[in-house]
Image (cartoon, rainbow, N blue to C red; front, side, top):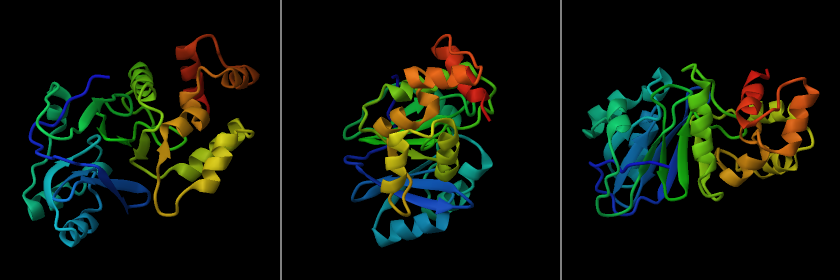
Amino acid sequence: MAGFDLPFLGLRQMVKLKQFRYGADNLAYLLYDHREAVAIDGGAAEEILSFLRDNDLRLILIANTHNHPDHVVGNEILARETAAPVAAMGELDRLKSIRPGGREIKVYRTPGHTDDSVCFHAGDYLITGDTLFNGTVGNCFSGDLRAFYISLKRIMALPARTLIYPGHDYLELALEFLARLDPGNETALGYRNSCRPGEVFSTLAEELKMNPYLRFNEPGMKEILKERGLSAAGPWQRFLSLMSIE
């Protein structure tokens, strides 16, 4: 998967992640080491600022997974209070692979939900915005389902240990849908019972076993589509069939 490092990051060890809730179900993030931090979809601006102060961290970048208002709402406050620059979505799209000293943050272009959607990958953490949720995927507001399919396949190729941190907590809705579509899914049942209170994430390994939109090649999913009278002719057609289910 092609990616790049943000060239204005001077981070040496960015290995920690902090998740913040805001609004009805939005999720904001800090990626940080012992001195510096990057805010992603920082709508929980006041909570982020408090965490930065309490942990003596300097915010060096404000970035977003896409340009929807509920994801960029904290940018102005964070920029005003910390003087950190805001990365324009156009910059994230255009940059090539740059490898400064220290640990990298990769940014993957993942169009589908929107044309400008990106995911941020640091260590085992993947912040997916509204491209991939725990147990489901985002709406294809761009209208480009083919691009969405390719973006999801790129994520699916990452190591199974990758931790998926989404832009919203849609877990209950996703599990309810899965219970109707595939009620015998043991991974989903186990995942529901093992969720950590107050933190929303999953492993890619779990997603590949429970998320219907990533399981278009599974024999069991093919049978489910056939039973519903939907096309199961090939991977792309099966993905389209899954995306058509309400």
